[in-house]
Image (cartoon, rainbow, N blue to C red):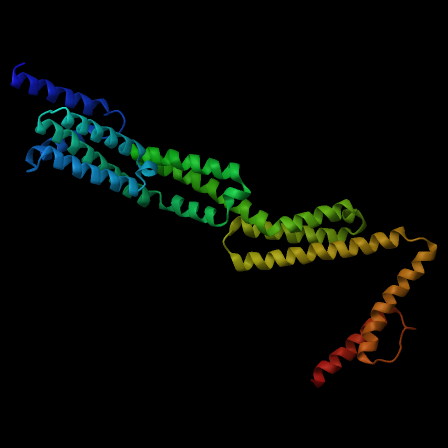
Length: 315
């Protein structure tokens, strides 16, 4: 075959190879033209250009382009493999250099995509780290998996240079991530309280101790509202959690005592009264107070409180 004709055919095949991938990434035609121009200007062998392309490919892998620009990485790999096969087959250096240089330029475009993603999707990527830190993937694996899928969709839009769509999608995803964060923090902080309230409910607390029950419910709702608005306000959330926990514990104490009183028979009622009296009498003994058990319990409590206040003032 005529050498000139052979070179023309090879060049045409190479361009077909490159344009065949054009549908996979944006600006492929521009990348191919730039690569062709730089390959022609490069004062190096085809083998050397392939080495540079290999180094660029390793960089792309280390920069996790498999995640941030997977189609760029895949296409660059295919282009590099084609250049290596062409070199082995003894194809002209100029054509091999063009294909190898296109691999390099495709990788560089992929690295640019990553930079754009890190900048534009920073709020989402930062929020993703927060979800990992609080172990949202363990507490709500399905919701977290949906977040990851949506993020991959945004990255695909960025790889296609559809930045406006990606920005709109990011707003939706951030709202979803916020809810996952809220659900996770609420589960971690308030599940014990909810378990306590469920146990109290099963004891009839809502009906036998309605005041204490309502107070505990309100305390829980306040904690939930705080977490919903500011899930990262650790100090305030800790205080709200303690308050809700104490309210639930108080509701259970009152529920248990109320149930005991309601369930008491005629012979047990006095025993309950005397037990309460003994509780106060322990304070009397500790204070070395005179025996005032003949007084109503509320008066006994008032006397002991006054004695304690007097002791505190002396100190």
